[in-house]
Length: 386
Image (cartoon, rainbow, N blue to C red; front, side, top):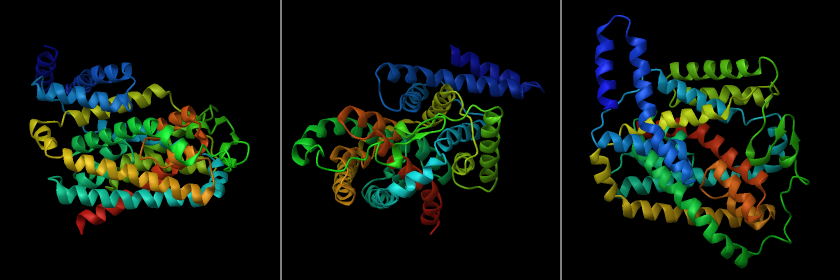
C-alpha cells in the first residue's frame, strides 16, 4: 500500500511544474522505507555491517517481491559518497606521521600482500565463474562493503553482487577468527616472549589531541567552524573528482581532502555518527534496489568459486600473519588479527577480546584501506580498459 501510494504520488507530482523537489523527497523516503527494516533486524542480531547489509537485503527482497522499484535522485548517491568519504578522512591526524615511522614496513607489507591477493582471487573468480571482470575484481578486494560497492557503481560492475560477495567474505572472517584463536594461541603461543606493540612502547598508541588512537579512530576537534570546514572540504574534494569522472570520485575526493587537512594539522570537527549510519542505509537501499531474480540464480552457480576464494583469502592472511610476526616480533594474536581480510571496526573490536593490541590492529587495517582506496581505482580502470 505504501509503495502504491508513493508511486502514485510520484506520478502526480511530476505533472506539476514545481513537483521536482517533492518527487525527490518521496523517492528518498521510499528508499529508506525499504532499507530501514533490514538494518533494524541485523542490528538486533548484532550482525557486522548491519546498516548497509541489512538495508541492501531488505530493499532487494522488497524489490524482487514486487513491492516496487525505487530510483534515488541523481545527486543523492553523490551526497552519500561524500558523507562516507568524510568519515574515513577524519581518521587521519598529524599523529599519523609518528605512526608511519614505526609501522611503515609492516603497513607496506600488509598493503602489497592484499593488493596481490585481490588480483589473484579476482582473476580466479573471473576465470571460473560467470562474473564480469570489474565485479570479480572488486568482490575480491578486502576494502569494505560500502567502498567496493561505490567503486563498482563507477567502474561498470554489478554493485549488488559486489556487496553480496563482500558481505559473505566479511561474515566468514568474523566467524572464523574467534574459532581459530585457540588454535593459533596453542600452536604459536600468545606472544609472551615477543615484543608487544603496546601503547606504552610505540607512537602508534600515544594519546592524541582530542582523543585516542584506540580502534583506529580519533575524537576530532570541536573548535568553532571546524564542522563547517570539514563539510566544505569534503564537498569541494568530492565535487572536483566527481566532475573529473574519477571512479568513486565523490567518495575519494571527500576522503582525500579531509585526510590531507588532518595530516597537516588542520583541526577538523567530526559529524554525529548517526549520519554515517544514515548514509550506509541509503547506500545499501540503492544497491538492494538493483537486485533481481537473475542475480540470485547466478549466485547458485558461484557457490564453489566463492568457497574456494574465501578459503584462499583466509589462508593468505594466515601466511601474512606469520611473516609479520617474523618481521616485527609483535604479539602473535596482534599479527593474526592485523592481517585478516576483515573490516576495520570489526577487527579492532575483536582484537580487544582475544588479547591483541587494538591500536596496532586498527592502524594496519586503516593503512591497508587507505592504500586500496588510492591505488585500486586507477589500477582497475587501466585493467578494464586494456
